[in-house]
Length: 141
Image 1 (spheres, helix red, strand yellow):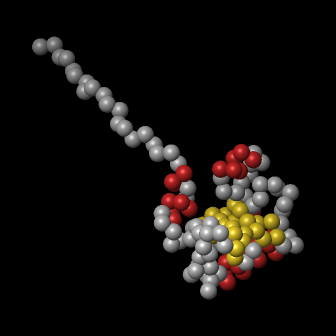
Image 2 (tube, helix red, strand yellow):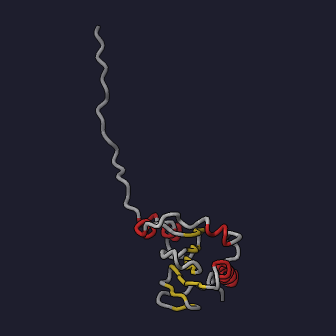
Image 3 (cartoon, one colour):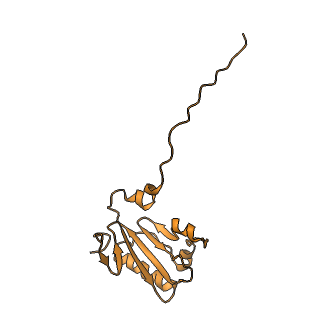
């Protein structure tokens, strides 16, 4: 049964990747980035994600790599291609040019969209309105 239809439970290993029940994460490494990306695309097709739009080539995929080398920024941003329910991420170490990490998210999980887009990680904005006294215009009579 494809992963999309039967998401691996927490603590399980599935085809070399690990699942926490919400996120399945695995790493691919081929002869070069083109080969690695083809492996990722084939895996997604076999696991029921062939309807998810993907970059056509590795050149297009590289356009999604964050231009910064600042590792602190890379910890908080997704360095790669993101389209619900998948992420194809580049490693933080730019020397590992032929490695891609594939993250697949369980679409049936409660609050999936909020979790996928990291909305629940954000601190709630202060929503208390600022009270102001009405402006009273004094006119001379």
